[in-house]
Length: 118
Image (cartoon, rainbow, N blue to C red):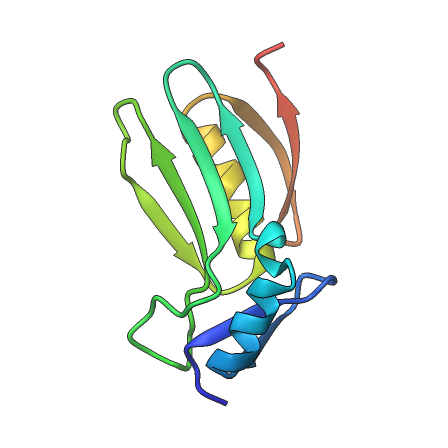
């Protein structure tokens, strides 16, 4: 297709589409699927989202998901990913870095987590 615009399917797979189809997806409510995970405290917020637009200089490895930290010492730090699973894993890695969760055991690149704030 064009290697710039992507839509997120219900099974979390992505599809390379034309600008027209991307805009149709947004207009039809696809944007409501863009937030993957969010975590917020009094001091900062971690947000992981589907971007829908390739933020890589390479079309072979499109970076279409992003985790960003707002506030605190790590304000503005951002990591981008190719897949939904990488984005979820990256979100929890940021939570771990900030001391919000403890990762118990990695399982095939997925993490079982324990919230230690309670």
